[in-house]
Amino acid sequence: MFVLLSASLVGLSDDLLQIYEGAKKEIFMDGIPRKWRTFIVALIGAAGAYWFYYKLGMNSVIIPHFGQINLGIWFIPFFIITMLAVFSGGVIDGVDGLSGGVMASIFSAYGGIAYFQNQIDIAAFCMVITASILAFLWFNIPPARFYMGETGMLGLTATLTTIAFLTNAVAVLPIIAFPLVVESASSIAQMIARKFGKKVFKVAPLHNHLMAMGWSRERITMRFWVVSIFCAIVGMILALLK
Image (cartoon, rainbow, N blue to C red):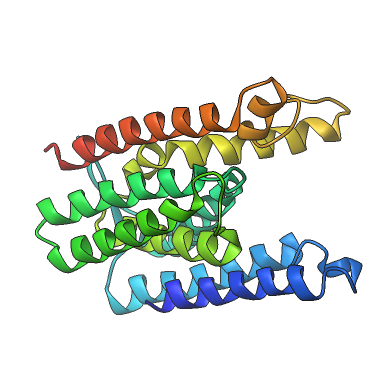
């Protein structure tokens, strides 16, 4: 709950700065500068890692079909890096309905994993989040009347990281959240390519590249939803298979 609230408050501050301060101060034109946000998310991740390692005694991850891998003290940086990686996938929030549909699929998958692991409280929490996202999505489908913004994406990505560790299913997170991985990877690849004076995509992240190629927003959203549902099902099966 601490992770969800703190990340959401950071996101809310970012959105408010864009609305009220962006026109006054250039530094806040895009809200809290990306480097500052990344640092704050890393601090939230560090707090979460501390709780898992020292309070819950967690220092390992389970890899399907390979068993448990003990990380020792390296569990802490691994948790922080995972938090930052999932946070970077927040760039998917760029088309009406896109992030909502994808995140609903992801949380549904983790709700299923938690249920079959008899973690009923976590399963219920995931389903509450999924239902909330679907309620939001009802009004976010074009023409959108509400927007996710950083308030939603920061809170959801931070919470997703925590749930992935609570269910000990962080190993399948890249599969279940594959659309987030692709979106983040496309942005990173574009930034690296630009340093060498080249471009991998017309525009990054991937959904913007697809729009530049002539895909309609509806087509992009529907295709991402299909891929997200498929990946969520595959990831959930892999997590539950012994």
